[in-house]
Every structure is written in structure tokens, then in C-alpha cells.
Length: 202
Ligand SMILES: Cc1cc2nc3c(=O)[nH]c(=O)nc-3n(C[C@H](O)[C@H](O)[C@H](O)COP(=O)(O)O)c2cc1C
Image 1 (cartoon, helix red, strand yellow):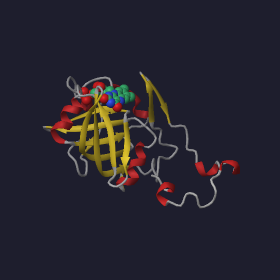
Image 2 (cartoon, protein in one colour):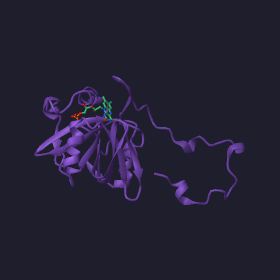
Image 3 (tube, helix red, strand yellow):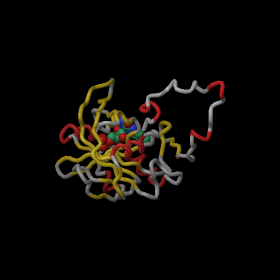
């Protein structure tokens, strides 16, 4: 596992992959599955996620404000689905699923080391939205398995994508947009876009 810049780490969730949210309170780490998470800001690097207020993860987050978002790959589909369909109020999911853990660098929740990438963060705001609470958090540290990530997920990183219910897709390879040029008729005239920020979105 290597540390990469937190901003680069946001690319881990650019593709809408499922994540495991790790939270900790009174020496207990809880893990639950999320698919409603997104990058929100580059400077500072921030993420947002929507969480049911009835969950144990919500209770823990309100206590400590610290979290880790870890990215499982397809080899963890059973554990990921279990953690998304059972509450930690009743069962210690880390122990039951035999998930391996290690200490995070800057926050108290443990890292699930079976995963291929991690974003450590602290909550900056929360707001009720419908039946969820939308949290924003600043990413302090990003860690990846170098075999799986190099400025973005490599093809061998089989991230999970939730379709709904118990159906998931896995990543099926990378397309390089630069290799698919637009026809001349749909190309903006030269000089029209001269704001470099527009051209270098994360
Ligand atoms: C693939 C998947 C994605 C999920 N995404 C979310 C989500 O984004 N937000 C949410 O509130 N619940 C989501 N859930 C449901 C929670 O993971 C579930 O309620 C879990 O039991 C909460 O655990 P906890 O009480 O231990 O925190 C998801 C479940 C699955 C299976």
C-alpha cells in the first residue's frame, strides 16, 4: 500500500465504484457498504456521501467525525454485499467477515486491508436530504495498492458497481477518450476554450 496525493485519490471514486465506509467509536470499528458517494472539491480534496440516519455508521460518524472509504474489488463481493445488508448494531461485521484491518495514518477508523484503495477523511458538514444525511468530508490521506492504481484504476482493478438489489457490475476495461477524436464538424473553433481549469478536470 502506498500513499498518493489526496487529490489524485479522488479518482478512486470517480468511476462510481462501491465503497466500504469504516467508522470507529469507543474502540469499535464498523463497516458498511456505500454506493452513493462522490468527489465534491479539488482544493481542498473533498468527498460527499449519503447515509441512512438509522445506520450504525451514522451514529459513529456523529460521535467522531472520522471515516475511511475503502474500495473493494470483485473478490470481496460476498463480504461487500453482507456489509450492505446487515447492520453493525447486531453483528461485528469485521470479525464475522474475517476482514483484515490495520491502523489508518491520520484517523481512528481501521483500514480494511483486503481493499485496493483507501481515502481517510474527516467530516466537514452534514445535512438531512430526504431519508438520508448527506455528509461532506475532507480527504486527508489516500492509499492505494500500486498494482491496481497508477494515476487511475488499472484494468486489473475489478471495482464493483452496484446496479441495485443484489446485482453488481465489475469494471470492464479502460477507454482513453483522447483516442476517440470528435469529427471536425463537432470540434470547437481554436481558442474558444482557453481556461486551463476547464481542460484539466480531475
Ligand atoms: C451495494 C450497496 C450500496 C449501498 N449504498 C448505500 C448508500 O450509499 N447509503 C446508505 O445509506 N446505505 C447504503 N447501503 C445500505 C447500507 O450499507 C446498510 O443499510 C447497512 O446495513 C448499514 O450498516 P450499519 O448499520 O452497520 O452502518 C448500501 C447497500 C448495498 C448492498
